[in-house]
Image 1 (cartoon, rainbow, N blue to C red):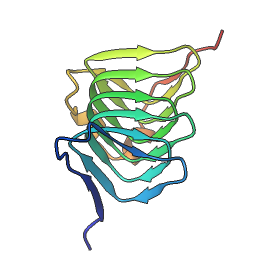
Image 2: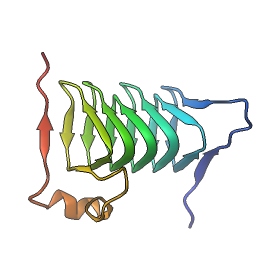
Image 3: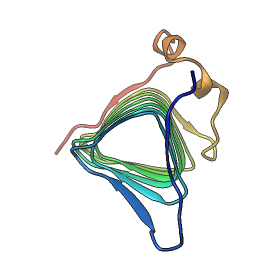
Image 4: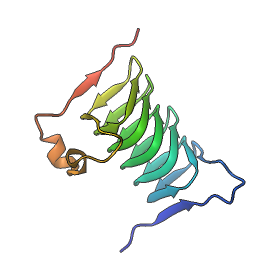
Length: 143
């Protein structure tokens, strides 16, 4: 059975799409515009740019040109520009060109500076990554 997909298509008028805090989506999201997520998503997200709200939870892979993570992500992230806010909690690997991690952010996974391309290590299943000795647990203390 195929996974359901939510797709946002740009008509030239909208520059971003927003999923409110009261929204829960199960399925993959593909957007050709910027996406702001304040709700819960269980599925992979592919978009131009992603901004995640503090109370938001994303369970799945994220692929975008740029991302700003402020909530919880349980999955891999691959983007050219990655900003991880102090409120962020990431359980998964992060591939990036440019990385900013604010004090207080929590990351349990590998950081891979590789041009935002998905490296083989990130493509592995979550189970094999969780059992790997290479997993990095990073907690940046808050001031």
